[in-house]
Length: 263
Image (tube, rainbow, N blue to C red):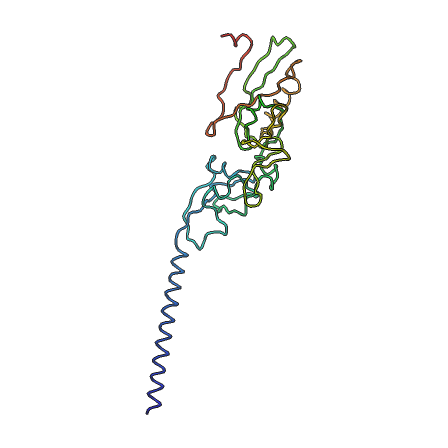
């Protein structure tokens, strides 16, 4: 009888212990399920996005939207803010509805300039200097208007100055293509020379090469103007005008000729 009572007591103790463990397990499982069900804000592609688009352009062109999805469905490295990939570009295309993740972005210096050229555009380098190149303050990612002066003869009687490209993106300045990550610090890509605050090699005088993203038609116009449109005047090739960050482009103008300067 005594041994039977001992067995009953032991069984009750073990049962109580098992009940406690089961309760803790259920509580932990419920907490895990609740945590996995918590909504998390991530960035999702609104449309198919080609490679080469910068993190800044994703918002400027409204290519992404914010979505709240359960945590268990969040992709590894999912992006919730453009700051997480600031200064980087898409190294691979992204499909509509897909979450953006850090693994799909690279710094331009790592991805190569080709990744930063928009589809159906070409990259063309133009010679400017510290004056015609906005005092050397341009940096990759800026938008500029391109002003061209043409003259049919040395006298300049038929000369005209006009904005020929209303808005285009700067892809590179000299050898700087943007920013790169070095030992955990984001800095301007230097290309062998000291850089100013805008990422351009500091020079008092001398040429600067600015690489622009141009449509093939605009590329032809500019290259023709640089090669053939200046008569004997060779001191200026192209002037660049820096546009505001939120600009839709320079207004359409008729250009100016000699007589118009005095009006």
